[in-house]
Amino acid sequence: MIAFDHPLALSLCLAPAIAAVAAARGRKRGRLLALPLDVWGGAVSAGAPAPWRAARAASALLFAAAWIALSVAAAGPASVAEPAGRANAGADVVFVLDASPSMAAQDLEPTRLDAAKAFVRSWLGSPDGASGAAVGLVAFGAEAALACPPTVDYAVVAERLELIRPGILGDGTAIGQGLASAYRQVEASGAARALVVLLSDGEDNVGLVHPADAARAVAGSGAALFVVGVGSRGDVPIDYVDPDSGRRMSGAYRSGFDDAALAAVAAAGGGEYRSVDDAKGLEALASTLGDTMSELAAGDRTDGGGRVSAPGRADPARRPLGRAMILAAMALAAVAWALRALALGGLA
Image 1: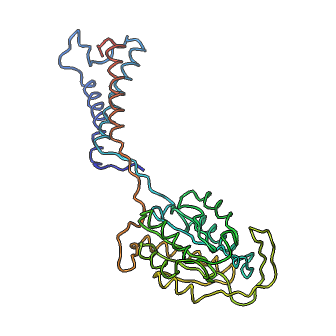
Image 2 (image 1 turned 135 degrees about the vertical axis):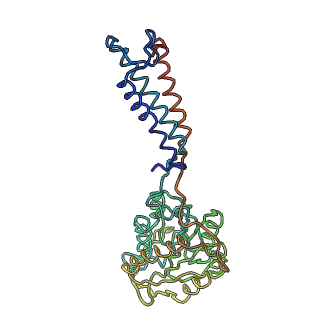
Image 3 (image 1 turned 135 degrees about the horizontal axis):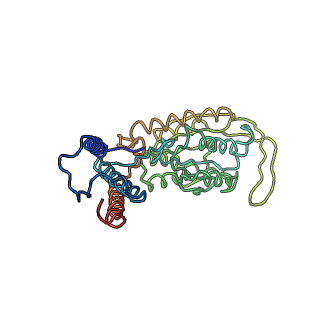
């Protein structure tokens, strides 16, 4: 839309119309003094050629348009583009996905990891989801790796998401290293708002970084933490293909899903914890995650010990148009002058 810094200046646009009305009334009253050579600015004689009449009228209209353009320029016009549908613009969201072999368990359909990936995909496309946020992916097993740096190209995020498979990063669950990798991303980005979302079955058993320490580092960077426990305890079906050897293992798996450990990670990072044991429960979390993003947008970015000022929405893009209007006025006036000076011989 178009906004004006000095809207009252737009009243100057009425000057050409007022001048035209005054000239018309003057012609009706007649002249007090008639001169035989009174041509400049005078009325067009009845016998004037049609092209001459058209050129004279075009010149007058161009001068009027030039005046209007200058009046609009004086009003300080600017094009203001609201970031519609981008309520989370300026925010970073990093998903930390557990890609350990245990995520091939089928207590969530079709598997824990597939359900977690479906949750990320649905959040990317929902109206209350990404909505302009830069989204990144970290995957971890025995090691952690950045699968996708934060980006607003959600097609790339979805493409990289599909490449994450159980066991791709080794046989183990290094939650601390996964969170540490996400911490490096949000710390380096300097985004006004940041959120780290961990999806795991909580069976941390390897890694050089303690999950609680990594969670505290995330909180210290000013990012919010949202932890989702994916799975259930007990005997659950599993169908796992080792990505290195190609060996397939299927049957029953004694799940060590650690709900308490994940809750402790969330508490260490001052974040929220939710546990789900089916795909529907995971889908329902989309609204909760949306609420977390809304709280970040409405408030300030947390820093563990206080609050850090951060804008809730990206400011609308403002592009001044005054210079363009002045250039347009100059061009219109130049064409009008050329018509009078050249086409009409300077006599009109």
